[in-house]
Amino acid sequence: MSTAPDGVRDTPRTPDGDRHRPTSHRPKLGAMSVSLLNDLMHNTLDEGYALAAQRRTEAARAGRPVRRSGAVSQALTAAALLLVGVILGVAFQQTQQDAPASQRTRDALVHDVEQRSRVSNELQRQAESLSAELAGERDAALAQSQAGDATASRLARLEAMTGLTAVSGPGVRVVIGDARPKAQTDPVTGQPVVVPPDENGRILDRDIQSVVNALWSAGAEAVTVNGERLSTTTPIRAAGDAILVDLMPVGSPYRIEAIGDPDILLPNFVDSVAARRFETYVTTYGIDFHVDRSDRLRMRAATEAVARHVDPLPGTPGPAPTDSSPSGQTQPSRMGAPGVAGAPTSGVQPDSGTPTLGGGR
Amino acid sequence: MIPALALIVGVALGLLTEPHVPTGLQPYLPIMVVAALDAVFGGLRARFDGIFDAKVFVVSFIANVLVAGLIVFLGDKLGVGAQLSTGVVVVLGVRIFGNAAAIRRHVFRA
Image 1 (spheres, chains in turn purple, brown):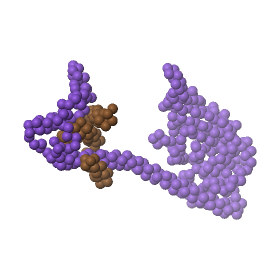
Image 2 (image 1 turned 90 degrees about the vertical axis):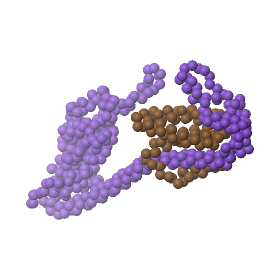
Image 3 (image 1 turned 30 degrees about the horizontal axis):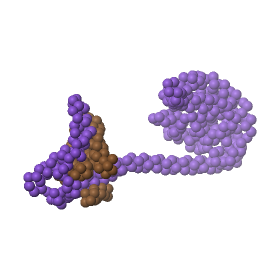
Image 4 (image 1 turned 180 degrees about the horizontal axis):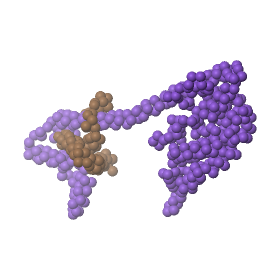
């Protein structure tokens, strides 16, 4: 027995020894499934070990030599354990690799998006400052003659109306938001529970469209959605779950601001079909819907629509589509008195001190 | 002592050499790990019981790993791969716990 590994020294008494009784003991419990479970729970050691030990005992008793030497035995065990270690290591490595792989992809994408957003913002700023420069040069050139002066004021008015220049003035602010989860008390347990909001309580792109259209028809002269100024061609549409205004994603709550005479705009809008429909949505689906007037709204210029197919006829007066620009954004605002808002259609003022829309002319 | 060293060397090898696992084999890696752990705990327990046998250990280890992989492979082909994986993990897990309990009794006499 001296050749066997350490633990095998006391083999002769173990296979039948009392120490192993609990594991090899099988209570007669009748039902097959129960005995199977019992077997599973109590016979956790491979029976091969006991059998091998028994064979060795018998061999020793019969005086036959033990087959394997300790060295071979050790080598076999070591080789098997080496393999076990490799499996464990590889599995760990694999798991580590797989999990961060998706994370890495995500991080790279986020990084890309952020970088492109920065570039886009930088270009936007550049475009705005160039536009302002251009507008300044244009105004300076036009200011040299009487006719040019008239053209400049006409241009400013047109730009304010088409959303191509930053404006300010009184108006109304409409806030609509997705239905929020409701906190309720569970009638059985008395514990507070959060009820997920009605799926119909999500604001869709066409809801925003209907509010914007109602505002236009109520007499709005300039409209923004979450700060995105709407021009004549600005799209409001859905892309998946996101709502894009002028291709920029906007999120709930949606702040829709409109410049116009509040005394006309507000009652007209509140009386509109869209507003009344939203009132019912508030009670039915629990969305947020607030309308209030605002004395001073400031709006940036909309991004310029690119004329793809039209060419201005030679000799036609008026600005070519690519000449118009948001002039006021980067210049310090020299606002006129906001009191001009008295008459209808006089709410919008170009935000750069250029003549007001309806007041003076 | 030598087996323990071999285990550590094996883990180091697996971690450092980063061997490429064929894509077809990757789903079976976790189940092979459980089967290998079962064999290791069984061997350790047999050693404490004083009836350790190298041949039984090696054969049981290889057979466990192969059979576990085969069962999951068959399950995958027959559309019950997830269920069979769970079954294999439960059975081997029970055995690992039983053997760990026996080892604990040997080590702590409790």
